[in-house]
Image 1 (cartoon, rainbow, N blue to C red):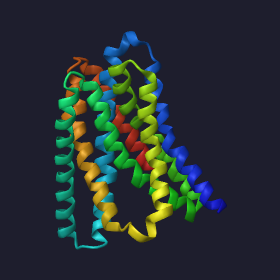
Image 2: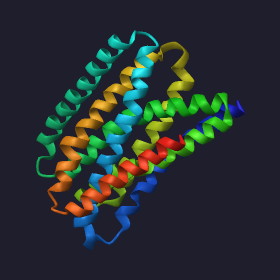
Image 3: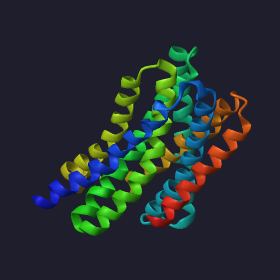
Length: 249
């Protein structure tokens, strides 16, 4: 029982590290024309790197456990495209409600994508910690490091579109809680319902959603602020930080 409690604790710490992403919201508001595009492009770099170096390879690996390489690649492609279509559909639905507030829409879409991303992470962290405490702790640290920029991708758009720090805090908290939700799912239902195939589907769908958000939402909106230097530097920084996290994880 102690190990289960410790596993929940470690997973929670990893998940709620997203709250550190609120820091840019406390910066000088007079610089928001730089903070917003830099945060958006930084988030785009983060999401692209997560998708290409983590979600897609892991999905393929899980599919290969059940299928041969070519069918696995085809299945992977189908669910990535499905993820893109889902993201486009969500985007269109949200556009009707928030067509005058693109930043808020970006924040909401990012929350949906990151919840889908964080639940499998929570499952992995919980199981790893339950089996090997040191392995789980190391995994939690690497997840916490890349959850910080994920928090930025939610907090900054929500805060600067509503001018309400409490709302930014609330939505960032939801994203962090989804990691703990993954741990709860692992504890209650893992042995009955979760398989390599269903986990692979979740990861590949999430990859498709993140690719669409990065390329068609975050980067275009960042470039619209005409801060090309800040946009490029932040985008590259997002990629480099996630590459570093990937190396140590």
